[in-house]
Length: 229
Image (cartoon, rainbow, N blue to C red; front, side, top):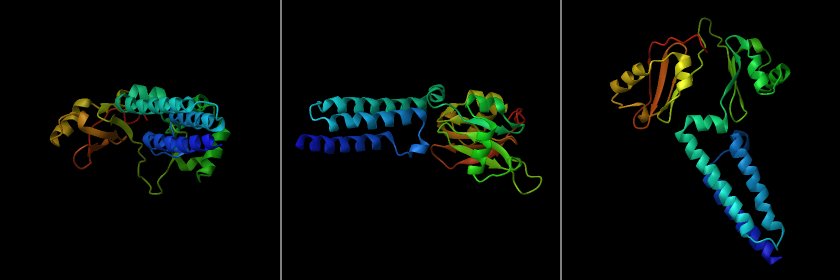
């Protein structure tokens, strides 16, 4: 009995430290990879605690291994947009400027009834009040409603730089010229896109920049793909 007690105490503190190292996130905000790792750790942690005859390392080794997998995957995701997309997926538009995107609904194994029910759960009873609906990689739904002010255009920012790296697909969609972005950065004394933490562009050509050192700023540039999203 004493062995089980000691194992339980040590396992608790071990899992506590591991979870802190993995980062602070609620279950509903986890990416699929993070959720799988967390569930497996919870299951593995119970093995040595429940049976005094199972060696303690039989639980410790898998827990530490899984933790390093998660931390390693998070580190690589910060460096590689391609890896991040493969591991975590990408945001999906369910309602865009053309209305309900049935193809994207099918990709997510959703039907129109699921979409309408989710909209009502988000406090939107009328689909005509919605401009964009986005499903984020963590499964949460983002609903962007129409503005009450007449004549005001609704814009949907898409990222063009994340952690100092170009988002090539979004660059192509938006019609942004990299040389224009680099000229803006040089005008602010910023050497290259590698010094930018995050940047996005809107359909009206407004670009937002958040830099590692310095104050964030925005500017307007010419884009050729404002009607593409």
